[in-house]
Amino acid sequence: MAKRVVGYLPHYRDPLSYWTSTLDFSALTHVTLAFASLDTEACGVEIHYRQKGATSGDEPGLTGFVKRAHESRPKVKVCLAIGGASGSDALGAEIVKDPVGLAKKVAKYAETNELDCIDVDQEEEEAKRTDVLDAAYGDFIRALAPLLHGMDKELTAAVSRWKPDKVLPVIGEFDFMSPMAYDYNLADSSPTPVQASPLEQSEEEMKWWVSKGADPTKLVWGVPFYGYQWVPNGQDGEPIAYRTIIDQRGSEPTEDQIELGTSIVTLNSSASIRSKTRIAKANYGGVMIWELWQDTTNLNWSLLQAIKSEMTQ
Image (cartoon, rainbow, N blue to C red; front, side):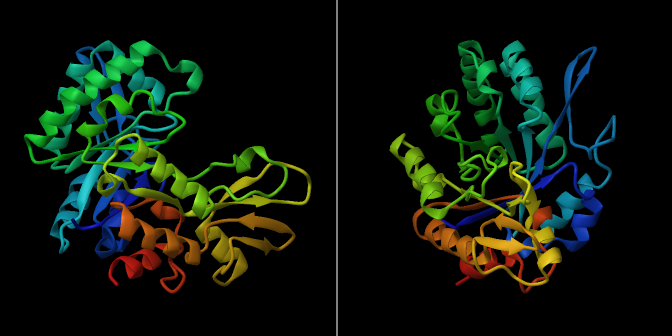
């Protein structure tokens, strides 16, 4: 089975028209657009994908982006992610309200827009998790999977072992799952530098899902294209994009903890990304990237190009 390279493109970054002409599709097997908008209408919820700030309809560049991805050789699949950290409350409410009806609308949107897969990213806060939502989530997934598979489309999920309860009963319904193998040590809640995604700890996430019955060939290892920065004032770490690290440093970091001016940054360097990619290629189903905008445009130091290099060896 060919290994997957799945890259997320968030709706709050550049419009799809930009990515249509600049993204290296040859480095990817899947691009996941994150996240869908759920519009409440008189006739019920409607699904759309659009850039942040737009209030209605779909992203104007969606059709062209999908066409460009499909014209790549080999073809790149375009997925739509629903939910996400900021949209899970709305998604969860709709799942509880009518899981089967929502599944039909999501599948219809994928069909209408020639999308290749749906990525379910349900990340409600722990305090908002309920048995009712977990049960309805299962109903939603069981309804959505055959609808998508009947159209030769895929069902995927971004998952984490700190929120597994709803996923485990339907683990066999997904074509692949992407463990979010980062942000373990809560770097944005620590006044001292910590590594948020060390290799051994992030691989433990992969092994945990295997221990729960996941097919390792259907597990796609999530890697971060960002780090955390601490300035000398005792404040918690702040996220910093890899591209910003490159811009400020002026060269490629070769270690996972560096000095950046008077601050300290922890990250996954190119060497660590390559190591994770090699392990994922040998033992799992590929890698997932959060997220593509954060990569540097300097191809010599690009993390996406490092992954591409490892995957093509």
